[in-house]
Image 1 (cartoon, rainbow, N blue to C red):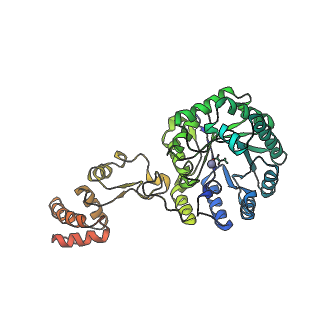
Image 2: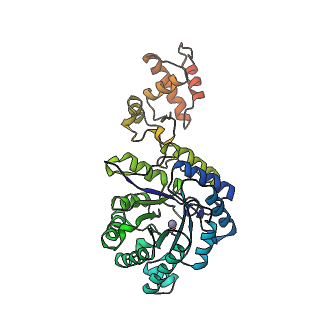
Image 3: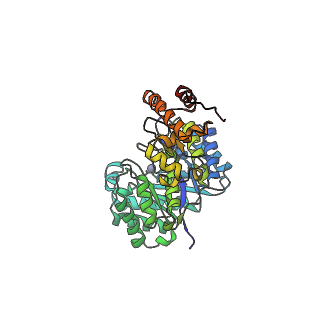
Length: 390
Ligand code: KIV
Ligand code: ZN
């Protein structure tokens, strides 16, 4: 059975770039955008053109450069925003305007000091206006995560009639539980007239660490686009991480969902974004963290050396990491020591290994991690009669 395509909407250069202190210049953004295109993302949200001349220029240049992906610009439900976005996108092969407005009671009351009717009117006007510039219009219902489903469905129905082809349902504050977010998508699928004319999109923030789980729940319940960033960067605790959703769908083929992303470029892209933004990837970050394929306890190392799949569900090569690493610490066992010693040129017999292991433990108690150079020192200190074969 052929798999259903889940579109990947990358917002590293817009929502991701909202991280304090991580401003990118146009040249850096162009390099990242080109890499995202190679990675195979479907949509690149290149920026918020009205927000600054620099952002306008970046969206404009990215629109000229990108050959495959749709290039998207964000706007508020404000005419001037939409005009400026349309101008920035005018050279794009596939332009998209992403417009929207807050729909939760809290946004309506405090941010807009308005009522539900006015919000629907503004939403419809914005979509119609955007549609006068481009065919591809995505509508976002900001704070949809805390918007009551019945009203959200009314907004969705109205903007589909006005011409929106993608409906973004952001959990702006990262509040939803996966079941709740999935149920929201299901409700919209079942209760919005004309929903078959539009794609539902997940846009989840990570305030409770649930962004990825919520996005996956969203696609299980009918959404067919995920908005995400490389390394999960973004406002506050960040956005859904691109590498996580891509690998979850790849590792769970029975879901019958496919992103079409070239996963072998994930690690390299993660490193590139981390360096350009000056944002370190936490070592235990799923998929792309430096410890994601590192094994340090004796039991795990022994298992992985015998068969990688004992403790790994992803082949590191699938995400562009050369191989799993066996890290030598005081928790490591003989199997790991023999494995690493062999890599640096010592084929130890069982008896030799016993002796070297005792020396290794003394070293390892003094050092956090035993490196290749230490192994030579340990072998010499063990006073066994062996030459390096390296
Ligand atoms: O989180 C959010 O609601 C957003 C919208 C502006 C799309 O980023
Ligand atoms: Zn967001």
